[in-house]
Image 1 (tube, one colour):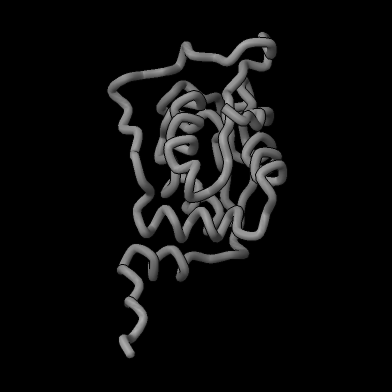
Image 2 (cartoon, rainbow, N blue to C red; image 1 turned 180 degrees about the vertical axis):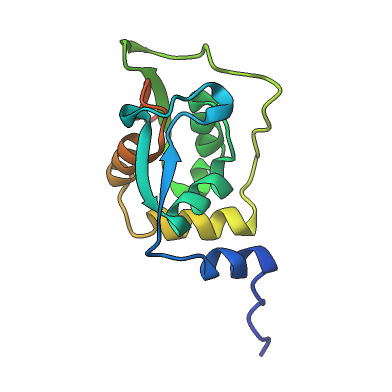
Length: 145
């Protein structure tokens, strides 16, 4: 019988990051002109903050949705990105084509996803993303398509 695979150095680093130390998360990244104002800031544990960035790096909201949807078979979740100021239609304005959308998650991204969302229902995952991580000008809704 084979030994289970050893975790990569990155996964070891993720697991070594503090799960209690608070840090400030910009829901709209500063590199996307995210303000340092209360509506854009969320206090997360250091590990949650790093886990989120391991999953999505600094993608725009719509591209985060696209990336999660590419991983749909694995995570059984499909989301549509909508703007808070125009909730009736999916927002496609942020599809920046030079951003890297990964077809499958890396082992580190799988570990980070499991840490943040393991055991949650798709509805709970969307709620967590909308209230803690996502640019406050956008929100995700579950979709079947």
